[in-house]
Each structure stands twice: as C-alpha cells, then as structure tokens.
Length: 194
Image 1 (cartoon, rainbow, N blue to C red):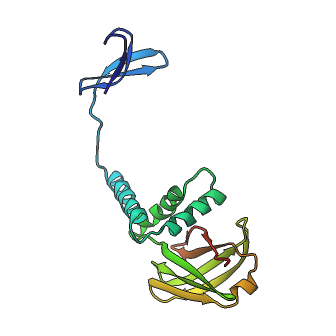
Image 2: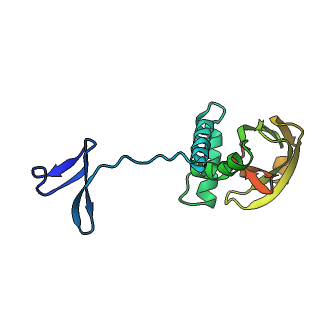
Image 3: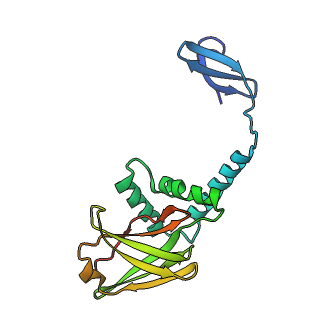
C-alpha cells in the first residue's frame, strides 16, 4: 500500500497504488512511474537455484535436523566466518553439492556421551567413506583428529577410547570428509565435559 505526504499527487509518496503506479524517491527527488509486473523468466539456472533453496530450507527445518546440529553450524559461523549465520554457512556448503551431485552431504542428529574416559558418538552420516573427527580446543584451534571408516551411509556409532586422556583440552568436535575434492564438514559440536 502506498503512503503519501499531503494529498495524492502533491508532495511525495512511497509504494504502489493498485497495479497502476509506483511512488518512490531517487537522489534527484520524488518520482512516479508506471507499475511493471516483475519478470519471472524461469531459466534453467533460476529453476535450479530455487530447487536448491527449497531443498536446503526443508532439510534445515526437518525433524531430522536437531537444535544441536543448528547450534553446531552457528558456533562454526561465529568462530570462522563472523557476520555469517549458521544457516548461511550450511547453505553455502550444501548448495554446491546439490547443484553438482544432486545429493546433500551432511551429518545430523549427532549426540555425544561421556563414559569415564571414552567418548561415544552417534548420529547420521549421509556418505560412506573415511570421516575425520577434528578435535578443537575452546578457541577453535585444532589439537588432534580421529578417523572413522563408515562402510555405508546411515547410522554412525563410534567410541573413541581414552578420548579424555588423549585430548584433555577438547572442547569442540567437527566432522569432515573429502567429497569430489571438496571438504564436506559439520559445524562445531560441543564436547560433553560431565
């Protein structure tokens, strides 16, 4: 809806009136132009981008994607890409996979259980192969890693024996795999300390 200052056509306005005219302001003053319906060419690239956006939005808001998974990407974004949200970090990473491979590559539903000095990791992995668990300190500095061989996509169930002895300063875990010569990574999951 258009807003005007003083009676219509006298001083200035802002916005569209029906589907007839649009009032606006430019650096040379107020202006009025004819309403033009925005184009929607539906090019192949545009359709692909809309499909990617829709798929990623559905993934992020699905029941499979826990608040811990979202928090992990938010922590990663906060420490590595200030000013970018966890959602934007997720979209930046996953859009390449959807455009090129047509299959998203991610980790979700990750849970961690401390058992004396061992750490049990459970969750879902959407790609088979070698998964590298990067272990980071409170500042996000790399202090070690652990490799997991995942035979098939699906449930991940791994125990790192002696984790708390090997990595007493561990604060975050990040999962990483090389896919199509690109690094597919998770966010930063906090490590349970109690």
